[in-house]
Length: 115
Image 1: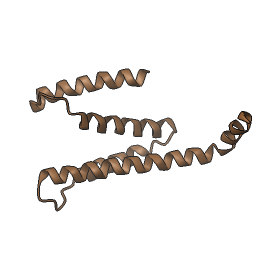
Image 2 (image 1 turned 120 degrees about the horizontal axis):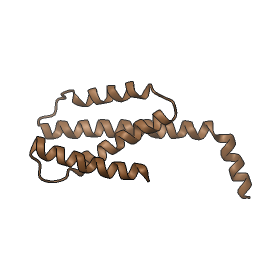
Image 3 (image 1 turned 90 degrees about the horizontal axis):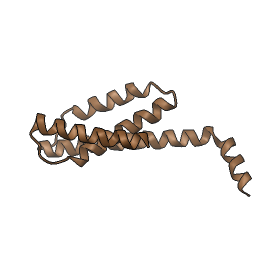
């Protein structure tokens, strides 16, 4: 519940900052979602004592700022978004798999208790 409340407050604050700094008058849900995904990614790793995720995440952020051979800024932004979100999801799924594998014994016990 705390995470949901914090995310709502952050969404409001980021929208206000965007309105002041970028003169945007509408809420950019895409940016809000990307920020949420980034925070959940880091939370998941840090919760599991994998602080090296900060280095990995920093490398992803730098890579999304690199220029590519796209013909316009819109195409470049699409590539960057695809690259970042794809890598975050891929690594998160891999972390989930690793968690399930590491907890296999406990999960098996829970399954057996239900039968």
